[in-house]
Length: 516
Image (cartoon, rainbow, N blue to C red; front, side, top):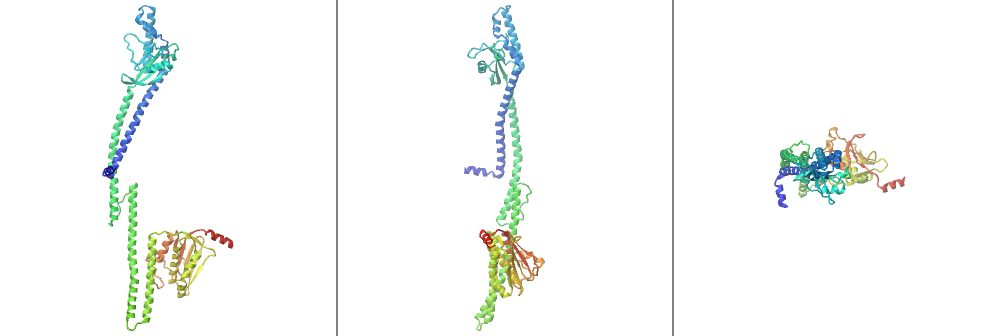
């Protein structure tokens, strides 16, 4: 089995395609010949049988005339005196029978193949009636049909051979036309032309099969060669891409077939891989740059702090200030690490949960984390809703992460004494709106701020990494929602998170109805 498989694979795709097409063509033609030629021969035989039946039906008058001939008198031609009445009657019977037989032969197209069998005994055996000197009786061949016709009183039709030639046979009992007649008319009609016709069709079929195979070869070889060449070009480009080589572009293939679709799919894959590679390089370069700055600052501060602490008279106030600044840089690094971890999870397409959550409850839990930072900055945070629970279908952790990003950004830019408003709405769809009273976002930066490592000019004096809003938008899209910058009623920026609606769990609906 393995050897046969290796031998078959050695031909390559081109050889296998051509071989398969040729084998299919040859087998199809062979099966067609095996099925059609016997059917053709059978159909022609049946047609000749039907034709003879019609001819017998059309020769009723001649058959009735033959049935009235006293064929047994014909034997007296040889023994009766030439001038006797018996001789004359026998001679007239012989002439009448000969004329009728000739007419029947003409009608059936079976000249020399029509014989009258008489003197049939109880076993069904008889003798051919002589038509006179010089007239040779036709050979009958097997006479089982004569016996059957005499015994049953019904005409017998069939096929057989006579002198090694195919014939259509008929045995007609004359008792059908004259009850006093016990003779049977035997017809042997040659159907040699059927074999000739079948042989002619076979030869034509062979010639047609040869032409079909040659045309198949002429068409299949170029077609297989073109197909294999197209696949080889795709394979070469895919191998270059797999081993890290540079592929300018996958070979263009405009054919509307499966290979063309494969080539276009490879081209799409290559473009996406190129985009991902460019994004990865930009991400690594930007992340490295963003990490380098706080790390360098932190290292410098720690060196100054070490110098202060190792001096003979440490400057504790300066050391405390350096320590505070180092803590700020450390928090920046922790924030950056958390953001990068979030981005890696998004890029890895980690499955998010999808469950009903109540935005008001989640919002109160998240805003509780900002009580101390907002108090230190002198900024108030207000949670507003429309007086009823706001249910959404989303991932609780992701919604909380987005809300933290929005509130943290608002807290950075909000002036002292201002207010940050967090509004929950349930209609027309669940949404969470965060607005501040800061400087807002310039028109040309409205799309920029949602890109990775992109920041607006107004940052409230605090350096960020430009990842928060990018993370928020991608998380929102993963949950089937959206995060957009909308126009607010007053100064500042307004961000709206829209989520998928859902119904409250059954227990909550029952509790709400009980309260009503």
